[in-house]
Length: 205
Image (cartoon, rainbow, N blue to C red; front, side, top):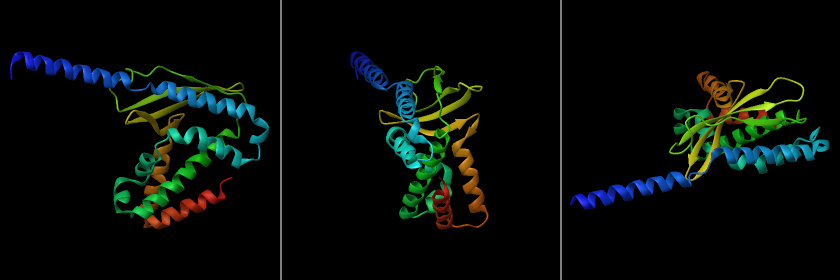
């Protein structure tokens, strides 16, 4: 290969990489647009929030869930060994049940909504060229100190998706992972873990 050909290949490779990075969407925009829309919807429907969990579930399902990677979350909380041992039907059932748990858990927090706002902080080191990253924010409350919330995101194709959420340093994934690991360590089968999760969801308001 001549020096000229090698030079052209290097230049083209750099151009392709820089173009790919340039096309990577800004995760901050996705998060801010989603949270702004979520808070605006809650503010416009405060009268419907109290005592109407179905209404809140619909809001979370429509506005938040499309930006959450429930597959990655489900695999992570169940654990690699248990996930690999589970049948395809069990994986589907667990993912569905866990998604319901996440929606209901998040929706319960929204029941206390008043007039909060969310402040996002710049991403350390930027986001270009990364596959996973963390976005830090604070929920600014009118009647109390701010609440720190961190979003863990993964790049799927050209779309950033949330796969974990930490509130005041407590990870949603780690909390559930500890719970499921304890159940499995105590001798419960994957089928029993799924049943317990479904029963827990049925009791949540």
